[in-house]
Image 1 (cartoon, rainbow, N blue to C red):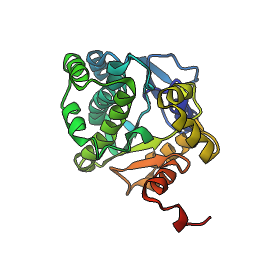
Image 2: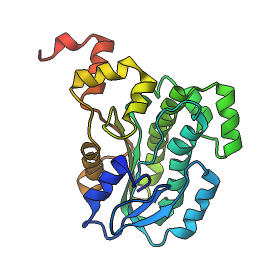
Image 3: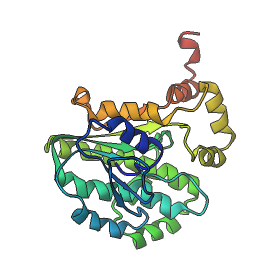
Length: 257
């Protein structure tokens, strides 16, 4: 579990505790959870992730990529490094160690829902594999922190989908999930970055989601009950996507009121 020391990753650890034979947390922050293996990793240093090849022993049944950064000003490069490039790199390292029947769940976001409209930029990002080319990309594309965050999550959704067929041949499933506002320590960062629209949407759906509610969905996606689900992005947003679609396409009067 990347990012397993806090937030949704930590909740996944709690739910798997006593069930999983071994839980390995890959995170820069030391977890306060008992009976786990911690590998200290700085996801902003993608080149150093190669060391995981030697630190990860044995085979795995599950990979949960939950490490991520919120949209903070002047952190465009780090956002893309952690949210997409490190996620992909860790996956590429662990996939050869995964057993048949395994499952990967990648943490995307409602912020990545416009991936179809932004495919040209996503296609320019995904082939990049090193820090210097990514830094040049950020400068060339003139990304601010909000666009960098949205792009990182769009890339996660597209890379997940594009990896589905190749992994199916190895009997490995891969899906992404897209939460909206979740009550974690970085919720204020999202509200600050997105502005009044985020606060209005939270009021409209009643409250933010909780890390446990998201983690329960992840538990389903890593279980055998979801074996025939792969390559999808699953919104876990309390109805946010439905409300946005109803506003965009003027659908509200067509349903129950």
